[in-house]
Amino acid sequence: MVTAVDDNAALRQRAWEAAASVVDPEIPVLSIADLGVLRDVILDGDHVEVAITPTYSGCPAMNMIALEIEVALERAGFRHPRVRTVLSPAWTTDWMSQEGREKLRAYGIAPPQASRSRRALFGEQVVACPQCGSDKTELLSEFGSTSCKALWRCQTCREPFDYFKCH
Amino acid sequence: MSVANIRVAETPLVLYALRRADDALILGHRLSEWCGHAPMLEEDMALSNIALDLIGQARELYTYAAKAEGMENDEDKLAYLRDVRQYRNLLLVEQPNGDFAQTLVRQFLYSSFADLYWRAMMASRDTTLAAIAAKSEKESAYHLRHASEWIIRLGDGTDESHARAQGAIDHLWAFTGEMFAVDDGERALIHAGIAIDPATLRGRWLTTLSDITREATLTLPQNDWMQQGGRSGRHSEHLGHLLSELQSMQRTFPGLTW
Image (cartoon, rainbow over all chains, first blue to last red; front, top):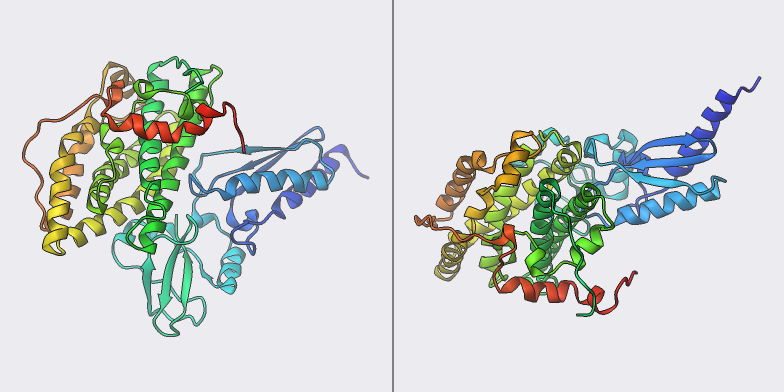
C-alpha cells in the first residue's frame, strides 16, 4: 500500500537525486553532494526548496550551481523550484565525502587535509602527490586557478598538481 | 553621473554591517586593480583570489545590511548607488596601491586585524554575523599568511625592498588606529553581544605585527597619532576616484544587469 507519507518520501528522494546530480562547474568529477554543498531538500506540497551552502565567500561557481539545480529540478518535473543559500554552519572541506576525496585524487587533484590542521598550516604541511603518491612535494603558489585550490609540485615525479585547500 | 544616490536608514546594526562591507569591497577593489599588473603570475592570481574573497564577504554583509534595514535597498544598490560621504570604510583600505610593498603592507595591517576580528565575531549573538564571521575567518587566515610571508621577504630582502617596505609602514601607520575605534552605536551593539570590542584585540594584533616585522628586520613606528574619519564618511581624496570607476556602469546605465 502506498501512503501519502511514502509518496512524499519518494518525491523528496527524487528531488534530492536531481539536485545531487549537479556537478561543480570547475571540478566536474565532484557533485554538489560529494562537496557537501547540498544541505537540504524541503518539499512543500509539490514545491521544492533546495538549501545550499557557499564554499568560499566569493566563489563564482555558486551562482552557476544554483542555476543548474533549478534546471535539474525542472527537468525532473518539479515546477518553480527554489534555491536558498544558508550561511550557517559554515561549509568546511571536512564535509567532503570519502568518495568525493577519491574522485578528486583520481582526477589529479590532491584532496584537502582535515581542517583541524588549518591553523597548523602556518607550519609545515604534507600533501601527497595525486599522481605518484610521493610525500616529497612543494608548494608553488598558495593561490591557484580557483579560490579553493593551491598549486603544488611533486619532487619525485616532477609533475605540478592542484591541491584542494582545506577550509 | 545621472542616477540619484539611495538613502540608507542607518540604524546601529545597519551601519555596523555596512562599515565592514565597505572595508571588504573597497580593499577588494583596490586589490583587483593589480589583476594583469602584478610582478609575477603567482601574485597576480593571489591578489585576484584575495580580492574575490573580500568581494564575496562584502556581498554577504551588504545583503545582511539591506535585510536589517528592511527598505528597498539590496547589495547592488548599496555598493553602486552611495556617494563618497555615504561610504563608511576605514581610511586604510582606500589608500592607493602604490608600489608592491605598499599594497602588501596595507594588506598585512588589515588582514592581521581581520583575522583576529572575524575569529572573535564567530561568538556574536547575531547568527548571520556569526555565520559570515565563520567563513571570513578561514579566508583571513590565508590572507594573513600570504601578506606575512611577503613582509618578511621584502623587509629581509634587498636594501631597496627593505626601504620600500619600511616606507610603506611609516606611511600607513596613522591609518591603523581607526580599526580599534568605536562610537556610541557600536558600543551598544558590543553590550548586546552582537559586536565585539576591537580594543580587546589590539594587544594580540601588536604581537603579530611585532613578531613578523622583527623577522623582517623592519621597525614599527613609535608615534601614536592616528588619522580618523572613514567610519563617519570623511574620506581621503582617493575614495572618490575609486568609486567613479567602481560605479561608472550603474551610474551611466541605471539598472544594467548581465
